[in-house]
Length: 162
Image 1 (cartoon, rainbow, N blue to C red):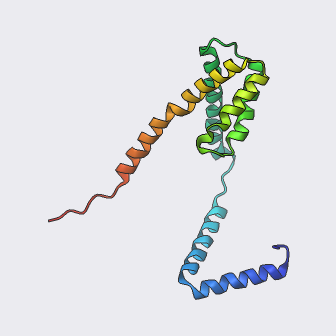
Image 2: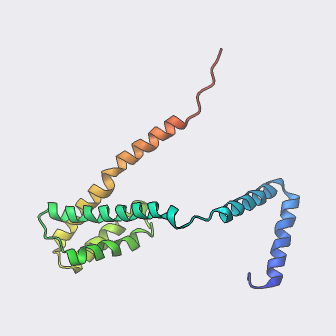
Image 3: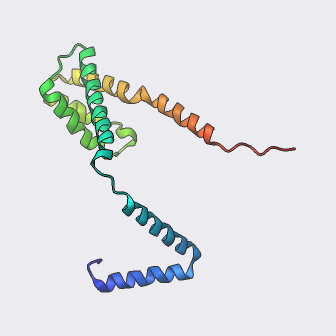
């Protein structure tokens, strides 16, 4: 529809007319113009992206190391050839966020991939559960406590009564 010049012109006219008739629509239009202007003004070069990229790689590496440590802690030989591939392939369904925290999705996909790379099903389930406990559940109370602390600190002070 947006390829048609007629449709685009009609949509622009309707949008502009709505802005003339409604103060709220006009405020939304102005906010969108500011947002687009700010987005176009941001032009980071190569160097500003190095630090976030490096931190993302470290996060990935430490998370994969957590999976390897989970296998090692259970006395299971770490299948190095398949571990990183299984971990990486698990990130795809995990990033879809079908459930909160990808609960169930990561566990099933990681267990399936570990079994396909040579672990027995009981070993794969135990390693996956230990990995998820240490990389997800242990961190939840820390995150909630941080959120609570920031929320309580950000509250405006109550007005004083004389």
